[in-house]
Length: 384
Image (cartoon, helix red, strand yellow):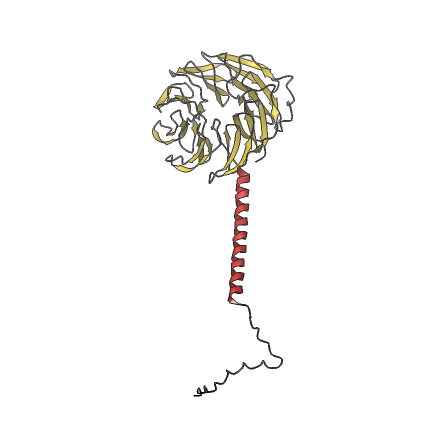
């Protein structure tokens, strides 16, 4: 039996040909697999580009934090702890062993005017301070000495009851503590004005204001004395030895202690608030306008709001902070062990790091530069 023949189905009509002179239709004959492959390759290329960009950013950030070798700089004879003081067109380098060197701001050698360095066998305990024509230096042999900055010769000396760790000066007067627990005042000509017993050694440089002298002791006391007479105005106890020099903030006194706290004290003697670190706070706070930065022996640096002592930011540096942080040109320069680290003053991020062979002993901003002293007797100059 024959199968029925299916009815004839006409084929669909062909698309009309383009008109003569008109645009020709482009027909994509690639398969769906080819399209997916192309999309996959495009995604892979985008991922590779993104990874390269992220890697470049990471390298740039890491390069800022890599410790680069420090410049050679200037060196006093032999390895020695040294401190820095800037004068009018010169730099004084004071060595712990008892040598005072006057050099140029470019560290190019000894400045003119000195036949030789000023030396004393008793040794010096802190950087000198300048009064008109003189550099005043505290010595280990219970004396304050004045050196003529033009000639390098001793002008006078004044005996105290104990070693003189640090000196402050204002209006041609010197104010200094001694390790026998007294605060002293003298004129720039070496004449005693007054001395007041505080009952405990004073090793930190005092803070001198228009009317008062603020002195901190190893008994954990902050004393306010009348600048003209030495009479005690008030006293505040912090509870721990104080090695860090008091600093004047925007409106209050900022001082750190060995309990790891930075205290905020009003000019009237009221302890308002404090900020707690993990290590000892033996370096003075760095203060510029309303920016207050402090560090501790555990390698923490923090910017603190001086009104209520709250934290703005906190950063970790590769070593103990033993010197005052220097705030200069939007950066915070910190001596951290054998390193000098520059942190962004607004964010606390590391911007620069230099490494030396010895511990940092002093950092100074002067002549538009940063000067960095280390315990091997070397002074380096860094352009910010």
